[in-house]
Image 1 (cartoon, rainbow, N blue to C red):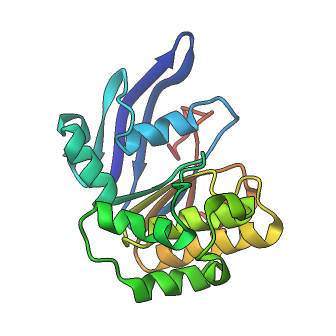
Image 2 (cartoon, rainbow, N blue to C red):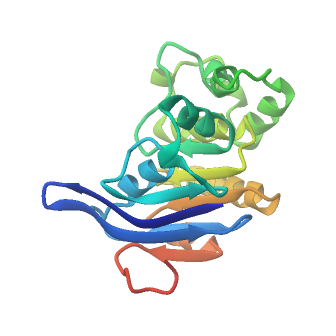
Length: 214
């Protein structure tokens, strides 16, 4: 489902050094490594949001470097659901409107019943009329995950999905990622969370380029 070959992206002397990565269909893989080793950079490249200095990325066998910006955006709207580390909800929309927003951008009729079920599973039902500025950090992260899940992507890529969450919120997010993976969705999550790393099928250590897990 995901294959990266000799990917490099440098920012001065720092950044992502030559990296290979493969994630199989239906796998739940966790990306580990110290802060600053390039995890977020790699995820941005794999989702087509950032172009590498060198190397290539294949999603379902398609070389995304050959896609136009419009085609890469369509890929993120359809095949890939990306839960970024930074806050990404639209502040002028309610939580409910944010959750449905990706369906509209993908020009799909949103399945509101499915969205309601996702919101309930993520303990967001009572917050759907609130705005992002009115909810807690843990609620915000769960809303971002709900927004990713609503289009039922084939691949979920998540950057530190449980970072800065309390125990309950982190457990909800981990359980939901595991649940969608068990239904066939491929998951790649960058994380420092020991429990998320433990629940993954495979841990990819970005700090160990010689590892057979990469």
